[in-house]
Image (cartoon, rainbow, N blue to C red; front, side, top):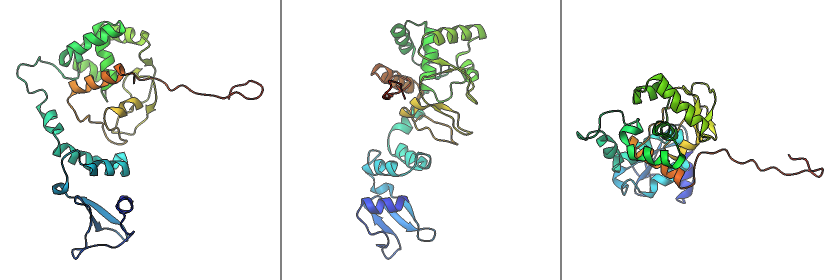
Length: 249
C-alpha cells in the first residue's frame, strides 16, 4: 500500500507511531490515519508543502499508480501557477478568433516552421501538429476546429500520409485514420485510445479523458520541441540474435 511504502521510505515501523489524535505524522506534509482493518489512508497537509515543486509530490507520484494520482496532480496544479496560466489562455481580446486547437490560429509561426522543416504545405503541417500534440484529434473535431471543407481536409491528409511522418490505419474508437508511428494505448471509455508517445506530454490514464495541464498553444510548442530535440515518434527497432545456423530469432 501507499502508506506502507511511505513508512518504509521514512524509516518508520510497519505499524504504530500514532499520536494522541490517532494520526501518524510522516514528515511535515503527510499524515497517516486508520482506515479499513489494518490499512491506513494517506492525507496531505498543504500547509506543510513548499509549493508545487515540493519533493513530496515526486515521492507520491513514484509510489501511486498513474490512474490514482489525479488528486495529487490537482493539488500540485493549485499550488503552482499552471492552473492560472491555463485559465488565462484565450482571454486576450486582441488574439485572433478561432479555436486554439487549430495551429494556424494559435501558433501560425510554428506551423510555418514545421512546414519548412518537413517540406509540407501549411495545411499538412497544421494537421501534423494536431496529431503530434492533441489527445483527441479525431476527424470530426479537427473539422470543427479548422472549419476545413472535405476536399481541403482530404488534401492535407493525403499529403501528410505520403510524407512518412505518420502511418495510415484503421483502429477501433480512434475516430481518425492517421497516427503517429510507435506504440498504441487501446484505452477504455470514456478515454480515447492514443499514441504511447503522448505520455511524455501529459498524463494518459485508462477510463479517463486526457486533459493536458497547459494551454493548447504551449502544448503544440512542447510537442514540436520534442521532435526537434530528436525524440520524434517512431517504432522501436527490434534487436534479434542469430542462431548457430544463421537464422534470426
